[in-house]
Image 1 (cartoon, rainbow, N blue to C red):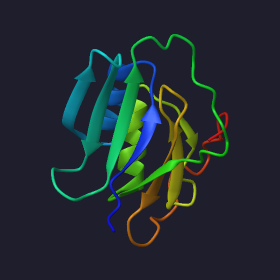
Image 2: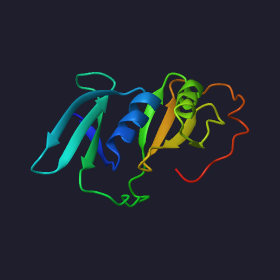
Image 3: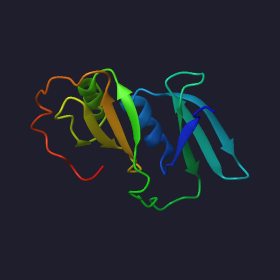
Image 4: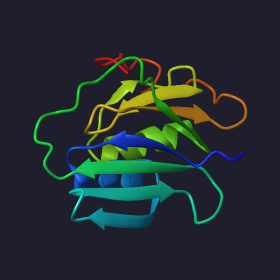
Length: 140
């Protein structure tokens, strides 16, 4: 058995691709449009191959926001530098919902309110400003 991907539905495909590619550093690996089904699938990952992927599903006729169920939880990514990853998101215009005050874990939400957990690879980084005094914002 092998893990393939996690699928999330997105309303604004360009905004979602920007969030995951610019903020997180994923790459678009492939895209498929279905005229008959009226949807687009975009697969994102670190690189081509067997690594896990994130499938963004865009239903063309969806105009309302998707409901956000706490039962979904979140997608999680290990990052080499939690502070640099959070700064990339801030620089791209996103709000860090749960800052990495502990040098280990942070949460940010995509334009479709998908919670993304960022985890520091290896040992936690030493607590540092501005992260240690940054408050939580909203939910994650």
